[in-house]
Length: 420
Image (cartoon, rainbow, N blue to C red; front, side):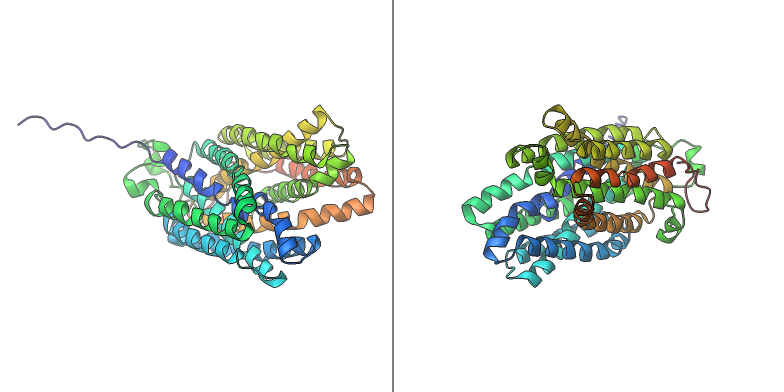
């Protein structure tokens, strides 16, 4: 009998999961500030609301959404990324349809809460978790690529929504967004996402374990619960860094037109500074993703905080020209870097068995910080009399988080992985 040819090995699925997660993550856009912002003027005009009323509805809706994220994270662990993403896609599309039917302040709060929970929160979370399970040694690189690709693709969302709003109206634009989510996210989740490498006979990073690796505890076996994570200093140090970036970057973006107007820029020029912000986020997401596979938290977190402090110091001394471009790049870079570092360190420290629940709790804090940031910065500006004073006051947050990270020690708690 002729010799049987050796079985063909399938290509590693992990990078395909990253590519699919980039698409699903980008489609959170209609639930992100970058997508909602193009609807604000239409909501004010058609619903007969003030700008303060719409902002207040957004604040309340975002805070309500944040409260649901720990539950969402726990369900992702229970159901798996594939089933969870399918259900989230159905729910997010439905929430976008509901936004097309808002009639007043109360229904606007409900709509904002739904799209923030299911879009910015749940769909972002499950996209990240889907990637996390497929990598170990190269997890930071994979998360960095995810963050960079997602941000780049998401930058197209407001452009597309604006075109539909101008031609067909804002209510139709919400319906188009819902259709896009249903037609793209649900098929990707159902037919493209694979929960874990072991489900298709593969291994994290596409690398078969060596004989010595078989004797080591797996990522799932070495996992910490959410409660165990909460009892570690490292979790709260990372969250202090994460919420500092979320709070202050959102505040600076929210007040960008006014902040840069004080520096002598026109509204059009100030809006153009969103481009270098996206560029900074994309570059930092990739670079810090690579660094996260090689450096410890004692170095990574202070580096991210240094980017945020740079942005704040530049915001306090803005002048037209090169400085304002550098400021925009630094601000975007702090967010891009934090995204890669945050997801990598949580998985490294606490394992994968309860990673959805842990990331869900982290998302609650992060989303809440983005809701509070613009108001806190506005109050600080009023007290200081200008943006310079407010920016300088808030440098204390990243400074404290960066110093605290320098004193983190390796984890030695039962059920929590060693290393920092």
